[in-house]
Length: 52
Image (cartoon, rainbow, N blue to C red; front, side, top):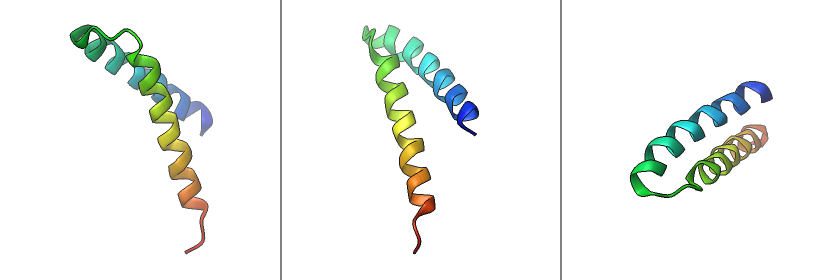
């Protein structure tokens, strides 16, 4: 599961970093997107483990 999420994060950061980074001239966008996507996956996993 962790490998799958890492690959998804890598692909999303490459796509968004490449496209929006070039359009907005923001070279650090890929790393920012990668941190945000992994944070989302971590928080959603913690929410799934909570008991209602």
